Image (cartoon, rainbow, N blue to C red; front, side, top):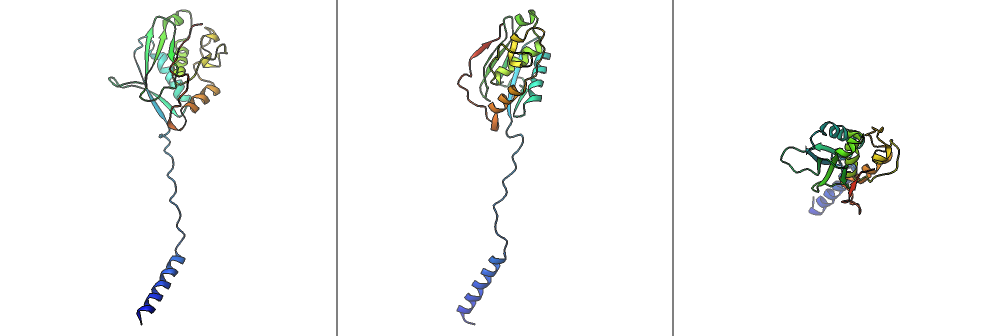
Length: 190
């Protein structure tokens, strides 16, 4: 056989193999990692003596009701995004949404407790500010962010559907949204 014949046979065989091969498909996109979209925010309550149980309950309420932001206690000696302190005044907090690496302050005020407001509701409400929620005063007890306007009988420490949705949106795609009003300090006096 001549070289030309071999080339024709080789080219025809290659074309036959390529035609018989399954069509190449793009590799499937990797499945999203369910934990990749979660923003973890650390809190330091080492200066909030007397509020530990209320803070733990407030944190548990938020962690049970939103899926893309998780509040965890900071290890001793590490920087926390949310610094929680006990004060003698009215509760107040820096409006977020706080982002990893940025620090905000939550003050849990004894003045509200002395007037009959629930400690767990106060803690959950102030944490809500750090997560980007403003006050919704006046408002019913069913709105966590109605704060003191719901009255001293209100002990609800659970965000309602609208509040949960706003936090979910603020931390969508594993990022904390920038909000023009974040950084303001909100004082929760009646």
